[in-house]
Length: 158
Image (cartoon, rainbow, N blue to C red):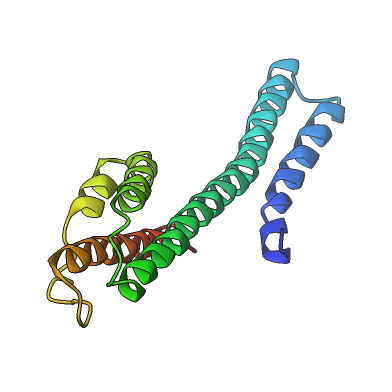
């Protein structure tokens, strides 16, 4: 954690100190002591949970970004393979396998991501110089999916 994130500990420690003082102060009725200690414990627990949840979310987002980047990298390799080998058959199975795995992962992000992943990001019209229809179609599909995966990466960065 960076220094600013440690500032969240100040209220937690302060509330703990208030609870300890209330407990040690002899002239308060026991019901008031109990209420102060209970509220202090709840506040401390909430603060600790907040810190834990922030770290948990940060870790989850980093893992999602890492997976998305792996799919982007793999997709770029496939797109370059299609583009640089127009004289060879398109690796249909490789494209379908990659797209299926990427789609399955994107589906775990939620329905809006899945529908965005499947939609055309208006990149049509881009073609491979000298490429035939099959090469251009597969290449455009992979490039479109890469474009969407990069958008998703931005959604999960902060």
